[in-house]
Length: 256
Ligand code: IPE
Ligand code: IPE
Ligand code: MG
Image (cartoon, rainbow, N blue to C red; front, top):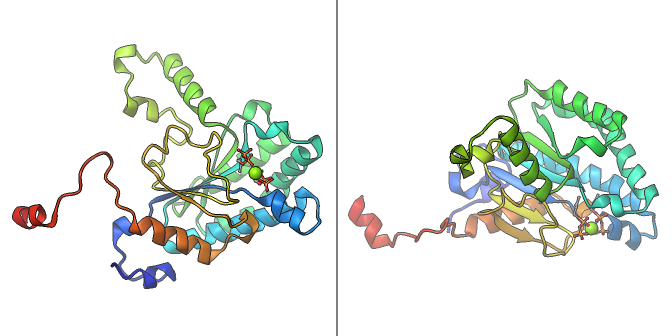
């Protein structure tokens, strides 16, 4: 068993590369239930969910995780009551004005993935401001999936590839990957969903092909460093084969 205690604490000591996910993707679910348990409106849960996100960005950054992608608003979330949708949009404006400077100082680079055509001008401007302010940063790459859907992503990638004049013969998985919303990032290694539901809900359908999946009942506003470490430890214990077979110890010795 690999001793993970040091790097799970965020220590800088050498860590086994394959034990630390390079890219973590999170469906931050359970804000509404968290608020309901406290007899509070759902938006109260979203506010505390934002605080949890800021903590987790920091925790991932300190652990040396290179990419963090979070699902903040799905293309299906417009079905929610108007009051909740406008509360979530307002939270983007509050979040950017409250946390952008701090994240930028830490070296975090922010990307926003999703269909901006239906998002208000003010919210688009806030996201644009976050992206341009952090464009030169080289620390953790945070992608906020906002009005994002995995199916939308595949369609928009195809549209852009066609518009670029890509010939059918030139279309390949590798070529299309570059047109996907997260074309700059490797595929997620670890997928986490909080809130107890065991589904993907139209998150990164293309990119999650070989991610290790981790589901927890923890409601998103309660997600903390210990929960992150638990997920990383689960990831480290998984046997990733990518469709291949694991060489037996005797084969490995023979080829050494
Ligand atoms: C996830 O929490 C956050 C968003 C979808 C914006 P929910 O709002 O879905 O919380 P539950 O699932 O109702 O508890
Ligand atoms: C997924 O959560 C979307 C986000 C966390 C942004 P939902 O709460 O919207 O998903 P379903 O409806 O339970 O599948
Ligand atoms: Mg939910």
